[in-house]
Image 1 (cartoon, rainbow, N blue to C red):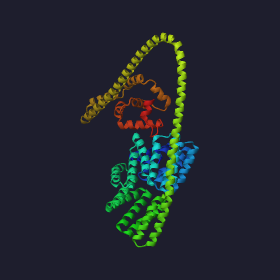
Image 2 (image 1 turned 90 degrees about the vertical axis):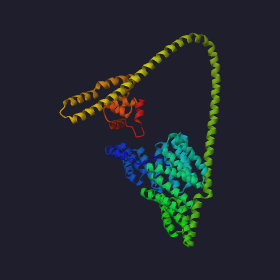
Image 3 (image 1 turned 180 degrees about the vertical axis):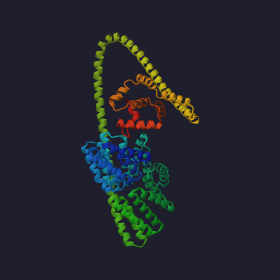
Image 4 (image 1 turned 60 degrees about the horizontal axis):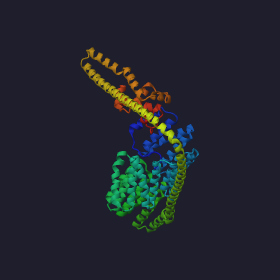
Length: 569
């Protein structure tokens, strides 16, 4: 999982809106918009996202803003990971880690470590990958990072444990991540975790269950335009069919995966597709065809540096040459296969990685024991303090009982009066809130009826153009709809219920206009867009545009909620 932007389908209307906005923006606002455009394309068509990414980097350097330079450099590393340029991403993420360390932003340091570890995993440097992931996870725990951020670490550690065949450990991490994503209702992440658990089932040879889980995710990937995820799902399903000797079905899924991979730029996945097709043709006995695919797969692995994938490529090359009777070449590739396998997945490496897991769990338990010991100590101190206070209280109470008895009656009477006064104020406020809501809904309904009547009169006038009476009535309706007295009456009701709201808005946001203030008042009441449109005598689309302009004046980002901000004022 890349800690930057989560996968998303491309929204053409949103892209058009962002392109229109970015042409008039400057400084950091423009950088943010370009970054949003990059994110729109990243998971759909990574190569098409690059020009927008380049713009963010140029602007950040031009402004000499250290925070944005670090942020845009991190985006570049994410891009390199998405396009399988892992050797480029490693020094890029090292720069990001250094920058955020200097800025004392440990949350972003954790994210950059996470992304660096993803590159190490794809390069087959599993020991280093797990060490970096564990470093990131420990740092997150120390700084109290968010649950979603912890879930990202669980997810990635689950991936690397699955790579080395520790499926039980891997699934435990996946389950911890999934619990968090379900609580946060993050559908994309839940889908990805389901797919990863299905891949573990594939590794455990639970083929039918794995295949059914993978097929269940395919419609979602299609609906969201998650092209790389869809290509990966097809490749995994094809591999399962190949193990079940359904070779024609396997070939069909491999080719569907390859078509998507070649179109959308997931370079390392193209190499995996070629290897699986080569493996398939080896099974079919078409060794020449297998060899053509395997040569492409091996070149791809060398180009992208995906050394774990290279292990399988070398093995299938050896099989293809053996099938052609070229045993010397077969032996050479088989020797290379064993050397690389032992280097990456040898017992010594696996043991070191297992030790990392044991060390992490041991340190975690030690921390928990220290915390519990401190809690027991604190409880004992509190207990002793409470006993001392209790003794002092008993002594004090003896001298205070007489005074307390005299005060109790007066206090009870005062509480009774306060309660009656509070109930009266609550009832008054409740009445005013109902009165305000009724007035607002009445105003909306009245305007809606008048606009409908106005529309009907215009239609009658068009059928009888010589009649001036229709226009006179239409003018009267317009006067009533635009009558400021209606709004002033509403404003009076509103300020009775939401005291100081208008003054707070003007104090915090002096650039807000009267029209903006009206919109914020209606949002404060949690009215629907249609009701707001009727009250303001504009279209629902006009309400959306007004909200957009207001968000800009309030300097809200896309993650900020305008409704929540207004309600909290």
